[in-house]
Length: 209
Image 1 (cartoon, rainbow, N blue to C red):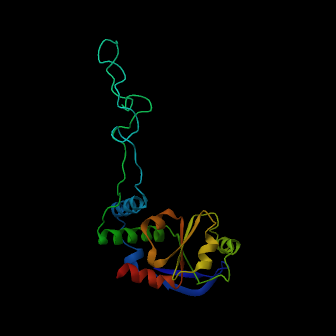
Image 2: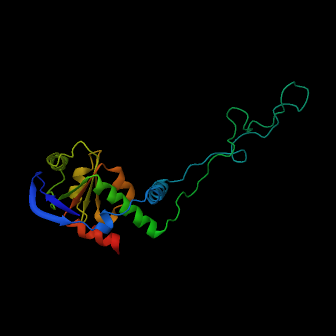
Image 3: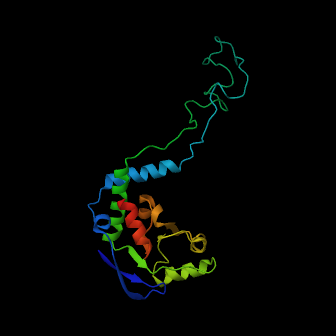
């Protein structure tokens, strides 16, 4: 697959890039995508939620009323789950939500996500650029030149660039990551995928190794 390379001012350059069909033009596997996204979201969960049950809640263990003769149901202590302010029954406790996923499945999921973007024509290749200082206005100007300022975008760079990252950080619909850190969730979560010219080599090498 061949794509044109755009300049940061939005104009087309004379260069083109060749995308690997084994990555950007594969048979899409939706189930692999679902598994990879599920694992990604599960790994984001802290799992620190906790509740107080009958054995751990603070309160008296005195029986509230006598067993018989009151005309009502039997009642235990004030910590009973049936009483307002009492303990929680079967509440959540700290746990690890992460789970393992086969490496081949994760790779297939990334291939499928990138193929989705390629088939939809949502991949834009731009010349490598950098900012002298962090400036949100400068990054937004690049997006406007590419007619992507109204879309949720993901920019892949070949190496960590703090000025580019900091320039995009205040934009709610823009995200910048290194090509070697690309994941299925971020690709699908973005409406358009912007790839810096030099990062294509890193991206294709990472996905084929």
